[in-house]
Amino acid sequence: MKLIIGIGNPDPEYKETRHNVGFLFLDYLAKKIDANDFAEDKKLNALISKSKIEKTPVVLLKPLGYVNKSGEVVAKASKFYKVKPKDVIVIQDDLDIEFGAFKNSFEKNSGGHKGIESIIKSLKTNKFHRLRIGTAVRALQKAREQSDSKRDEFVMEFVLAKFSSKDREVIKKMFPEIYNRLLQVLKQN
Image (cartoon, rainbow, N blue to C red; front, side):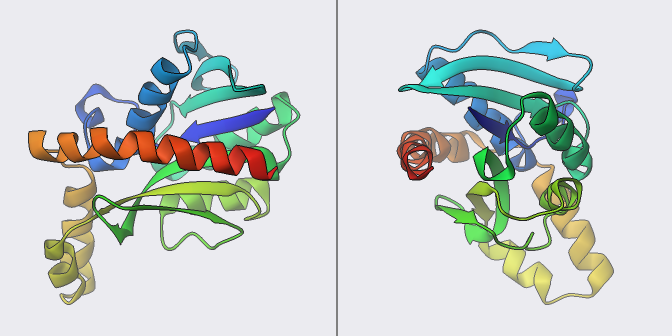
């Protein structure tokens, strides 16, 4: 069994934001694999959907806590489903990757992503898979050259901003490619 976790914030105002691209991908994935509807699991504090990808049983999970506390839910779910860290796949936004691109990684540090830091801390390892969906734009590079407080303020506003309709079109084109990469990751294990 594989645990596929999309990182995002649960409140409606964050629905179409860059920080919630993990949730957006899980919605796409659930439709693609004809998974059951997401249902709330109060014990895990998450929305859960179960299905199979090819022959591999999967649990799709959207934590209902905020991004920075994702680790608590991931640790509980890993324990509940008896899944080893190597069988955890996290779908996340990534400010170090240009918008329109994505990467997968395994056994890497958080890159400053608070949600990933939380997961590493809770699982006590970084030996889990990540599909990192790029959200970086040119304005972000300029912000990185400013003072820490101005940079942090820009980054927070940026990740919590909604995607434009043009951005959503780019994402729609990316999701099938990310799905194909997910299939490769599933075959590695």
